[in-house]
Image (cartoon, one colour):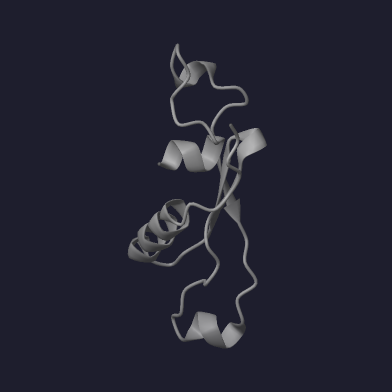
Length: 85
């Protein structure tokens, strides 16, 4: 599901990820978090997103791994995006 979310393809390249063009990348996205939220220990509300044309996963900087996991799973499983046939 992660592969389809990032690349819009449900299968890996025939010869492996070495041949994925452009290469798979993860881009760290800066989020404007209010000072009171960062002091209070709150995490970023923004969901991860992807640029399928560039095979790029755009991840906000979350404070906790559990938040990253939950938000990424939610974004992937929501089935939003381009359905190309």
